[in-house]
Image 1 (cartoon, rainbow, N blue to C red):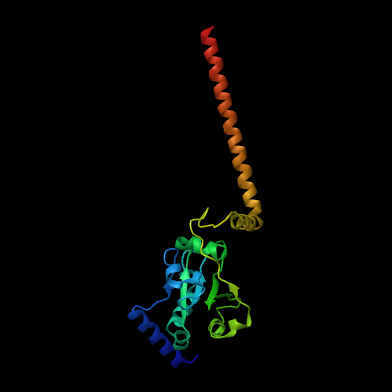
Image 2 (cartoon, rainbow, N blue to C red):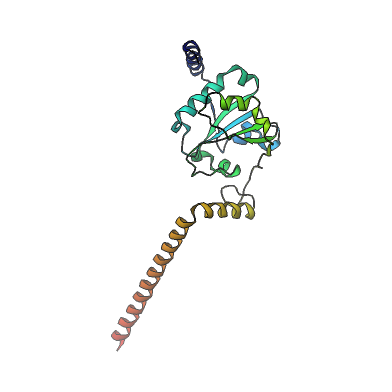
Length: 212
């Protein structure tokens, strides 16, 4: 990119900020209303950027890239809407799309005409994400958009199989830590129970001696 192109891009970004245009911030409250994802006919072509850390600002290159895309003519003409989500206020949406909040990198998902496409490239490479959004994503077969979970068992889970599948996934990833926590908790309660039984026995013995 030439110096002149960078200068013009900077002016465009400043202009977008001045007029209040920015990357859409989605959360559990507005996700379905804004995207209409469950209908299979979304309100646009949504680029969902799931940031496992609290804010996408943790990835400065990605933040500036999304802002660039949000004001680019070809992206706007294609109806592509860049957006971000964080687990702080979008935990149900993370679970719905099966995004692991322990990941150290963002996950980019594109919703297009009722299909779901996951970006597998490197957004840090020049134009790779842009070119993918503008057509290369069609080289992959789309997956169905997950259904919205309403009034489920836990964090919006719809049924027991969903809960078990995610528990098994977490168990496989963090099995040792979970086992240590369970073992430690079990030992703690056993010690607590032994102390309680000892106290009751001691009080009973004291009461018997007083009666004698």
